[in-house]
Length: 171
Image (tube, rainbow, N blue to C red; front, side, top):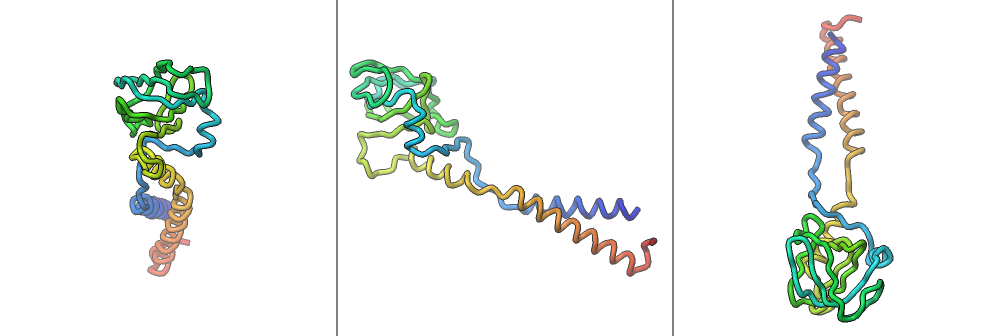
């Protein structure tokens, strides 16, 4: 009986810790690489003008090549989602971008920068990447579990001590 009461109190205390733990912002896309690392991992880096955007990809007319086998004037077709929440990118027809890609795909975390905008202005995509990186660093999981277990053990100990003092417990 005493073990059952101890278990119930311990589980209740652990449940309270889990319910009361602070919620972290949830981001579907998390980019952890620096610009240098993105450039190193890319198969291709081009600067070009977007000529077509579809639900599954983008076509870019290449203006200059920093890395890879594309040529100036080539049309490069890349797979990309239009949703930044799924690590895609919202390209705009007629805008110029510096685009990193690997295996014919690109996205928010691959390294995309609109270059027709002023260099110091942060694009919405860049702001969301920075926000994602900061949000992804703080994960309280293990400490909340250890804290919850400690609270549960203390609560169970108090229940056992109270029952003994009241004379309800058996030695």
